Length: 264
Image (cartoon, rainbow, N blue to C red; front, top):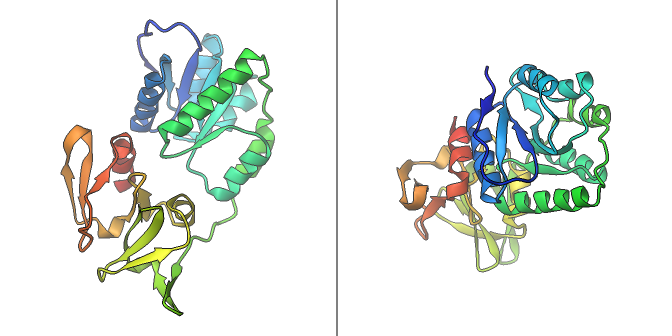
């Protein structure tokens, strides 16, 4: 697998590289970073080519680093080369690992990467960089946190209040979840809507990402209820669901590439 090299832009500033084994995901992240005004000159896709590249090139200021690469964990790079670059992890790991990141003040971006969160991460890095406050990471400790994750139990059902009663709804009955007027709703395959207590942000972390995907700020959909996918305006996709018709179900443009990867 060969290194992808992009001609440098006119921007002169931070030296940033991406290490990500999935090429579509790497290119999507590259585009998002370049929209922020930064130049990405190198994309690396495996442990092997990363090791080769670091031995032949000056180390960058910042690395966007996926944890699981095609030929092993990215930590293997740091076991063999003393890399001083700052790191922002790009990860699909579950909530337990994210809590570990937070407790250790480690920067991370959860896939699919939100542009607002990307802006915050880069701004945070720039502040540390300008103050010469980039501390080296204990990659061995991080590896211990992540290599043998405890199996997470995803939500299997929701309880919703109807009058003075509670109704239990299995996740298999969900056609979509959506936000509206500061409320979060669950729409079922029998064409009913129920108000739930949690926000979409919280629900997103509680559902199995193999089965559910957040296509926009408004919608989370399960794979099993996708009836039809149409090309829509501004490089977006329109989803047809069996019964939900209250609003157009649109995959946000910045999530289209990741959505296609999720679909398999």
